[in-house]
Each structure stands twice: as structure tokens, then as C-alpha cells.
Amino acid sequence: MIIFIDESGTLPDKNDPVVVLAAVGANAPETLERVGQRVRKEIWSRKNPEIIPEIKFYRAGDRTRLRYLEELAKSDVDIFVLIADKRGQSIPDDPENYAALCYVLLEECLLFYQESLEEVVFDRHFHKQSDQDAFNAILSKLIKRPIPFSHVDSRENPAVNAADMIAGSLLYKYSGKDSKFYNSIKNRIMMETVIHWKEAKQRFINIKNST
Image (cartoon, rainbow, N blue to C red; front, side, top):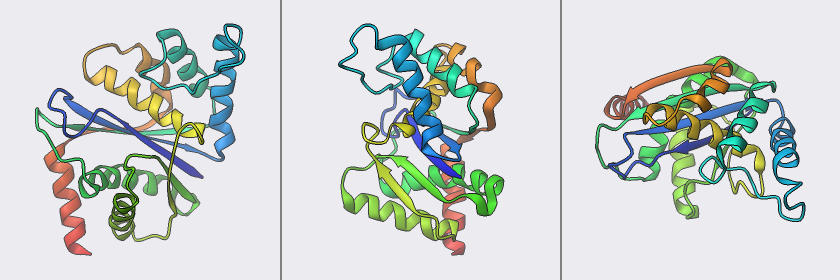
């Protein structure tokens, strides 16, 4: 089993009331890649078959969003979502703070998948290799299991776009914009947890100190 993770909303921006992290579990990347392929053929290929862009929540129109999420809901995937309530705070976007949120999310995924979890793939959050290395080191120490992490560009690994689409749909719901995207995939959600940022960070600190 492989987990793909992406977020919507940002830690530093006070205008983002929440940050949503989404994890999509699939047996193989091809499961998620086929979702995007079907939607691109249906909606975009007839318009311009030479240019078929990646599907990202904040670049796609409502029709594309809904078709993608409907196709994803029909696929053999598991969805886990963490909604971190910031309450107007501006939080530094550094490896430790991002790892704190990812740990809370992965904690649930590990309980669900146990030994069948083989890899965790993140849509590239940090572009500096030093930040990626620091993030990996913090998270690896916390989960205490030798699970490989990779940080990918969604243009090169379109499977991770599934997590982007899920995170975007949940952010729309929890920001009070629209729930129709969430409603199209809610039956596939295994975990949907709302947590205050301070609680998430304190849980992270407690585990960090215990290790």
C-alpha cells in the first residue's frame, strides 16, 4: 500500500482559517493515474488534444473537479483527512511544524494499514533539499518504522494529484465556500479529524520528547 499526501491552505497565511492535509491510500500509483487519464480524455481532449494539463483543484473548473472526485470515489482507495484549525494564527512553515501535522495524519494511517504500508509520497512541499532532509529525519524518528518517504513534482507523478483534489474539496467545505465537492467523495473517507493547531503541535512535542 502506498499513501499520497498533499495539503490545501497555508500555515503562515492568517486568511486561511484551516490547513487541510489529505492522504490517499492505493495499492499502486496506476490506480490514481487512471482517474486523471479518464477525466482528461472526457473533458479536455476534445478541446485541445495536444495540451492535456495536470488536474489541480485550484486550476480546474467545477465540472472537472466534480468528475475527478466522482471517478476517485469509484476507485479502490482509502482517504484520510486532517483539518487543523489555526484560529487566525500565522504559523511558520518550517520542517518541524509541517512534520507535526503530517505525524498526526500518518498516525491514523499506520494504525489502519499496519505492516502493509510500504511508502509515503508527498507532493513536494519544501523545495530546498536541506528542508526535505530535516522533515524526513523528524518524521522518521517519530513513527519509528523504516518507511521510505519521497517528495515529488505532481507534473511528474500525477498520482499525488488525488491528494490535492481531496484537500481542496475539504478546504472548500471547512471555509464555508461549497460542500458539493466534499459530498462527492465523503463515502470514501476513512478518517476526518478536526484538531486545533496547538493541540496537534503539543501532541507532536510530547511524542518527540518521549523519543
